[in-house]
Amino acid sequence: MDLEQIKELDKKYYFGVFGERMPVCFVRGEGCRLYDTEGREYTDFFGGIAVNVLGHGNARLKAALHAQVDAVVHTSSIYYIEQQARLAALLCENSCMDKAFFCNSGAEANEGAIKLALKYSYEKGEKRKKIVSAKNSFHGRTMYTLFATGQEKFHIPYAPLPADFVHIPYGDIGALFETVDGQTCAVLMETVQGEGGVIPASPGYMQAVRDACDKAGALLILDEIQTGLGRTGKLFSYMHYGMEPDIMTLAKALGGGVPIGAILAKQHAADAFKKGDHGSTFGGNPLACAAGIAVMEELLDTGVIENGAKMGGLLKASLEGLMQRLPAIKSVRGLGLMLGVELEESHKAADAARAMLEKGFVIGTAEENTLRLTPPLIITKAETHKMLEALEQVLSGSA
Ligand SMILES: Cc1ncc(COP(=O)(O)O)c(C=O)c1O
Image: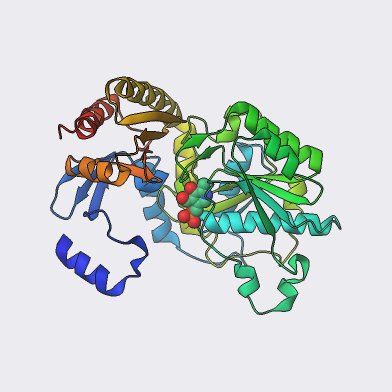
């Protein structure tokens, strides 16, 4: 099919939730390159919204998937699953967490993490309902799916509502200590707000989040869905901040593009879920977990995270250099290879991303005015250099 035929079919049959999409359909990928229906080549600086940490067509990931497809794709978590157990071990042994549970997306991981925190409080006899999170944060798109389930026995520990959600200004330590109190069940935070504009927390703020939780007896849920798995230059972003969460959620990069999410928890929190309290048909199936194992092994064995950290530093410094020359750039923010370029009001990020696409570079946006760069961690200096040249042309109006 050519692009016009795909667009026609999409317009007729797909929900309109993505509006007018970027005018391209990628059909093949290799390393940091993507190819469209017409065979045109692009360099990927977005990684499918911070998913493709290993780039496209990674040999270990492909081999693991082929082997798993040949063996068995799906069984059920009613039975033991070797890949599930091995991936859980890899994640726990390389983080501060003790237990894992696999699901299928980031939203599902956060929904499960909130449910776990509520159950933890219920088990303690406190039944706290308040969940504190930050303004401008993004944690997913599910609603109270539990309450949509028409069986009362599943509602009892969480009734009458799943939670009372309170939002505080990100980075405001005063508001944090004022809000996180004896009624607070959990605080849900990102270390770098991704969708909200690529805004990293200061080291002091994340420590304060931990302290506020400890003082109030609340759990800290860290949403590492975008920041986790090497994106920020360390395996998990909490490692930059000298603090540890009680619960951590993952998705995006975990399967290298194969859908999988995870709730990780320290023992005290994980223990709150008893038999029958949570589950998933697909979550942690052999195929998704085989992908997760390959991604984790590649991240741990090959120096790809170190490359990402180095390239992130270089790219950030180059963007800051560009900012000195280009009035269109207001600020450059981020950690590792999770970078945001905030544009002046008169520049729309979506227009710049479209102009970059025409030049053969895939970049993302966050909010109206921020360009988002989340390339595969294998990106090279040469690829970065070319992208920066194109960006300078686009933002200086000499495109
Ligand atoms: C920090 C964060 N949490 C949760 C989500 C939701 O993940 P998913 O789209 O897989 O449900 C996202 C997605 O962008 C995210 O960036």
